[in-house]
Image (cartoon, rainbow, N blue to C red):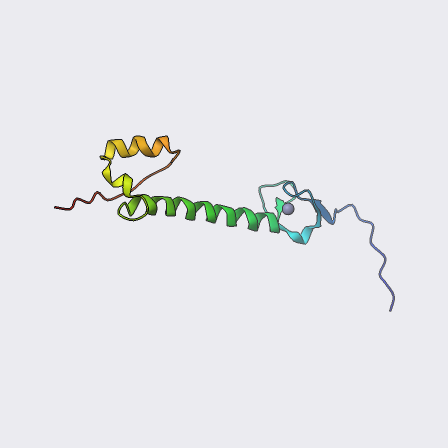
Length: 107
Ligand SMILES: [Zn+2]
């Protein structure tokens, strides 16, 4: 069995991921036609991680809304607020983004 010598070529076979800084084979990068070299700047691992984090952030936002939503459960004190007060209260607590909630009145 003869080992094939590495072909010295002008085409780079490795690329440095701008996120994790590792030098990885080009196969570790997804294609991206917008970039000069036709590849993403981040390796697949970093892309995956980033999309996972995006997903997590989404879930976080959703659960935040749910927490406020279920005012009878996890945030009993929020049920006492009027909508306007609630908005101020949530701002004060650092909540940002779109909030949808139902206002429930027990008669
Ligand atoms: Zn990476």
